Length: 246
Image 1 (cartoon, rainbow, N blue to C red):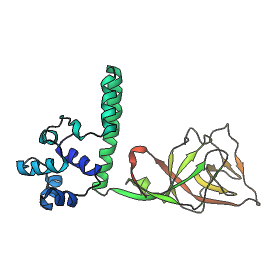
Image 2: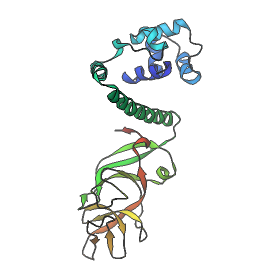
Image 3: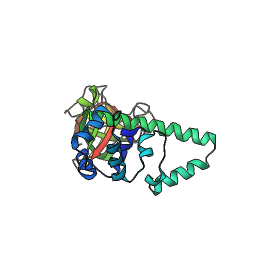
Image 4: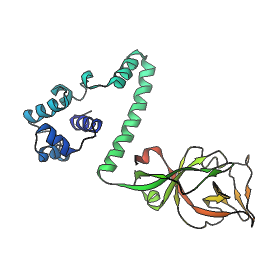
């Protein structure tokens, strides 16, 4: 990690804003803000020392990208490092591949967040069943920050798929983006509620169709309480998720 990444991590651990760091370190806010906007190439030694003293870390830790200061690590981080050292070459390579993947995901999320290239969409914990039905109602929800794109701009809410009846198009546990509308055309996939149970299904002429032929279609008659909650406009990949706001 470079200086700015380390500084950002130290601030994040403490839930700090730039103004908090300025007050705590005794440095002008413009100095702290300038580090993030212009970089740290011309950082003065006194500024560096003030930041290091405030966080209780060494200057070497802040300056050198590959320098690891174990005094800054919490118990969990020390435990991870100790286990990593015990791995063989194959294990370490596997860990680094996973670490690099998640690091890239988090960096992209931070860049989108800082640039405000995101949208906030209601995420309902109630699931849309791809199977036997799952209770779907207007209960509590979280606001999910996701990377902005054409498909997320179209979405009014997000639900999670439960079951396997819509495989291979939609799998259990995947999050789907839904545009709220009262009906969809035949052949389109939507979120439907039948007698209080939510389903993700393809609309047919006289039924709700399961793409996985191991599962039965759902026939709806005049005595059923039935409505369409919206049209599925896409799937939300994990790397498009930025954060939850409770």
